[in-house]
Length: 443
Image 1 (spheres, rainbow, N blue to C red):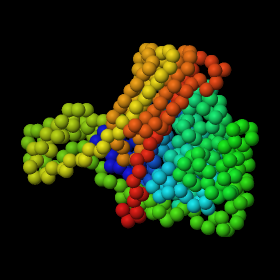
Image 2 (image 1 turned 60 degrees about the horizontal axis):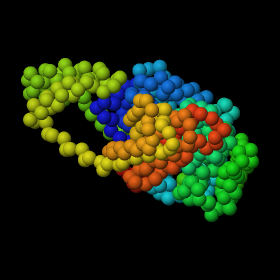
Image 3 (image 1 turned 45 degrees about the vertical axis):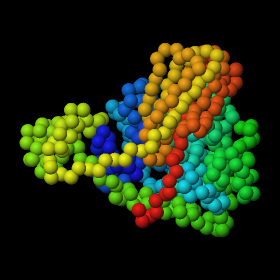
Image 4 (image 1 turned 90 degrees about the vertical axis):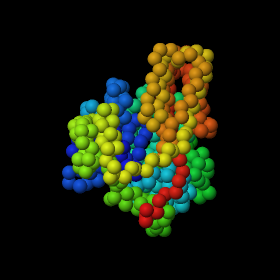
């Protein structure tokens, strides 16, 4: 959990913002509290995306999908304002780690834990499919592990899905999803890849446990019609869980310690930085402090809707410098940079192109000639880096590659099936986790 920054909102609706939980390509998630003291998670759309009608419509559909799917294994939506200047949605907060974090930091889960994970995810998908929703982004980063079970999160891809458009996370997408024709069987395929990752650390590996190997193979059959439905899997796994041996324990101690640490962080979030200096600094600062008082008040009022104006920040800085009794803060260490490279090749120009890194969106106007290459260097985020790439081309074939710190994370060619016709849209994205130990419950 990270300390909120000066430009972050202090309140969203009736919720007081306490800390940052994480950020993705579409939004930032904050820890907040209701007036009654309940801990909640608030997902807030990136301000630069909120100016785009397409993204606002997509967030609105995500709220509707998450509301319809909320239940035993999906966090219920408690409140939302998709029409706000910066749209937001509030859901239940549960101390948790993602499946991706758990496996990358503590190793593959035991077979018994993976069976319980399979039962919970199958039950979640069965409920989602009954509501008429296809998730389209079942992957380890979207599975929260808690002491009481799991939660399947993030309906952003489901909200933005369009026929004929390839959308999802590479490595977890079914063949038909890559081709732009996804349905409920696609979620079952992704479930199989997610279980393989949980059991082995790799989405494409086969586990040693016979029961899990057969289950994953059934989910990942090439023919969508040959895969079991989520409801069939849920019934089958529920019967298997009746054996007390199978349900003895849920998660290994290292993962439980990480969850306990998250609970401690939520109970004791990092201090919220003040937007203006204390009373002592204002008194000592004289005229500069008086200016800062006015500017600081404006910054505080504007903090709910966006970052404070530059002059307010300058005034605060001057007032702080004018207070010799206030010790200077230690400089924040600059994180190591990370480089993201997009490479697109093909026989003709793109008619539209946009890319985003951790929500920082760039759209190129007009036709884009190929080959096209863009290398972007950004500070290394504390948890994971998220990227997104969208483009449209009127004819021919196009190949794109994505590299993070020189490692190729995606290589795809389109159209997958020429029968889909033109113009052809591609919408893809993914993330790279930066490993580190899950903190112990003691801090």
